[in-house]
Length: 479
Image 1: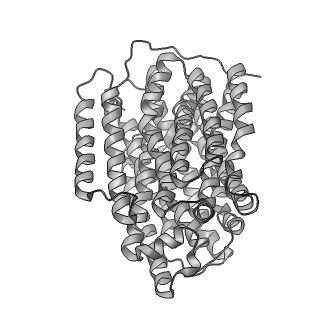
Image 2 (image 1 turned 90 degrees about the horizontal axis):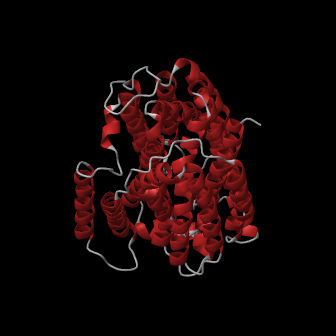
Image 3 (image 1 turned 60 degrees about the vertical axis):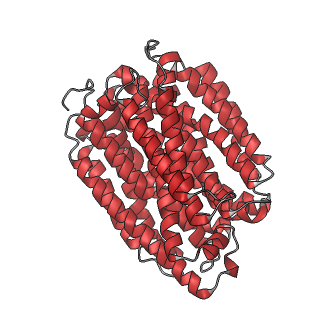
């Protein structure tokens, strides 16, 4: 077998496992909140936020470590950590423990995500990268769809712990396969240094802002002054950007943003992630909430059209972008998704499966059209020795956008829905919510999806401005 197919199959399995885990946890959140002792609404949101926060905080430095010590070696290490973290999650005795063990999982996921695109880019010629990334994207969709179905079946029948057992056999097999089958084809750049200051200020700043907002919205275990924590977080983020212009090997290589394709693609991917990050979360609580009252399995089936449409358009858009470039396809994808979100902003107190198909197919089709061409455009715009960093920056922005999207969605919902009712819905106790609060909850969903529509429409502008070039560039060179 040609090595490029070995690389594609292995990275596809890694992304499949990570994406399966994301949705299997999402669909099971109300069950976890209802059955895991000592779990608050704040804990439940941080089961997601903590995972994404850690991933976003370390991705770029993990990409740099991979450039220094080998992408395959650290990619394999990520499989092992993710598998161990999954086992620990299944043994959690409280909401706080599950949040912490999910962070262990996130470290493994960061090694996987920061290296998979770079390993693929190294293995495939420039004329086939869009297709390879499109196939890789299908694994995200298949994993997401499987996660919805498996989570819906396992959580209420076997127990919420079983949703983490699924990762263990996959992870053990993938770790061994990666160790024995993948090989290092990139040139190591051992002269780089880790940006410790950047990593600490970024992680501290982002976590402080997220903590401040979620404590203010949902309440936390300890009362912490909102403005003090928010101000500290923003100050640390400002210090992060200041430090990035002063260190020799910055975590966020700002010089890469001088490349028009790189800057435009990453701006579009951030806005896209801000819009999409909370789409499944909101629907999970809506479908299992006080108006729809679906069981986890049925709720998962309702969400399948979104995943199926991504799976259909992902490889097609990647194949087309190899021939015609990324700009038109990525921009069309954003426009199609924005129409889907606009339809979701008019969702009723109850909805049938046929009524939900059209908006979810539009949202998923747009994602399928956007993701692979946009990622190929970003990766093709940078020199080979910077691909690990470029992949890490791009995936960091995806995770930052998704993390902020969750916080924005919960904040919007809390401004419209009484917080006590919102927490009951999060904890799987929506049956105790009064009728007026149900109407408020549905109205808050409308507002969340309207804001998402605006974000996607804004993302169209950088996507159009990316330029037509698809060849690798050097930092600072025009694209």
